[in-house]
Length: 103
Image 1 (cartoon, rainbow, N blue to C red):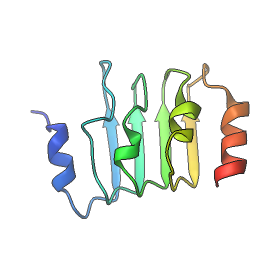
Image 2 (cartoon, helix red, strand yellow; image 1 turned 180 degrees about the vertical axis):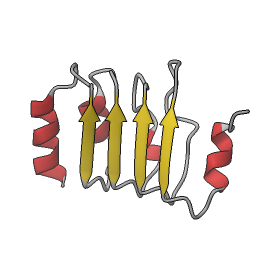
Image 3 (tube, rainbow, N blue to C red; image 1 turned 180 degrees about the horizontal axis):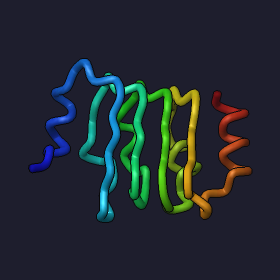
Image 4 (cartoon, rainbow, N blue to C red; image 1 turned 45 degrees about the vertical axis):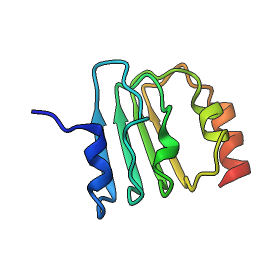
């Protein structure tokens, strides 16, 4: 059994979400205005993360494309914390600069 991405938008009181994926999935269809904490595992990209406008905490586990900073810089976000685990190809210097300028 699986959850259709579109149905997540109907969970109006959802504040925390963990998604584990084994394909080249992105977050474009995963829209929700109430999620404040998101943990994604085995995603290739965070493309579409702007569809969660109240997101404050982001945790990424396992390799991800090195476009995290570019995507986060492309929209006004409310992120307070970013946690990266096993993401060796993400440039931590740019993440640090992003946190210092936007947080």
